[in-house]
Amino acid sequence: MGECVRCGRRASKAATWEGLICRTCCEKAARTYGICPGCGADRLLPGRRDGIPTCRDCSGITRDFRCARCGIEAHLLGGRLCERCTLHDRLDTLLEDGTGRVSPALIPLHHLLTDMPRAKSGLAWLRSTKVQNLLTALATGVMPLCHQAFHEHPDWRTAAHLRDLLMSCRLLPTVDKHLLHVESWLQRRLAELAGHEHLPILQRSATWHQLARLRERAARHPLTASTVPLATHEFNRAHEFLLWLARRQCPLDRLSQVDVDLWHATHKPHEHRSLRAFLTWAIRTGRAPRAGATGIRQKRASGLITGRRI
Ligand SMILES: [Zn+2]
Ligand SMILES: [Zn+2]
Ligand SMILES: [Zn+2]
Image: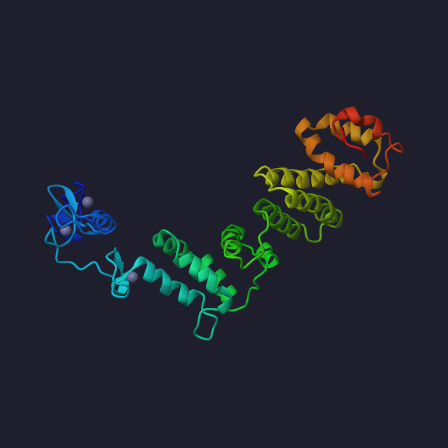
């Protein structure tokens, strides 16, 4: 322990160059590049002369910063390898297909990751056990390389990031990312509702109405970030409405004006808006009584189905 000559903090010794250097300052020094004011070389400047960063030769540092494999001067990890060479080795292991080689299908992903601007970020990402398991599953064929497999993956955050990377190296077809988020969300939500009495109608509405509409829009122009919350509200509102009707022992196909009025009176305007699409779909597909039969059409001003032809 001692006081670091660069940052002034008390810390254990990681190097003794112009004095005791702490681990943080040592790592920072091994990431400082530029033209050395002493010799004019463009290289790593870990040392200090009069407080100015200088190369190891001009500052009398004996430590060798060259990677044992690629020879660049850098912050070295185990085996005296630079971060990029270490990242390369980590990926060789994680993307191995079970026969001792990188899965040929995932070579573009290997290239994408080893070429990323900051190898340190790649190594940090690969430290996650979830990421490691996902990559190994893909490499060994346990998980198929398709969007559906990513939708079904329980750890959606990890899956979503990897899916974006796979799309950017064209290993998965490019799909609007907001649309993918909605698809994954609906898939999880429907799985949670397994065995629920409302599952069939919610599944139909989600698949044939919500997703079909979003896919159509996404084909015309990119969806915005608000697509995801809007779609999830729409689904949840439909489910709440069905539960509300069930509590009142009113099946959807017997929905009456009285029910619509009561629901309207007991719910907030933004809730009316998110139910509108489901209600319109239910009427259009004959799952709720047609307009006229219940007087819903005359209820346009209620905000439930305003502004829509039904
Ligand atoms: Zn320090
Ligand atoms: Zn120099
Ligand atoms: Zn290297």
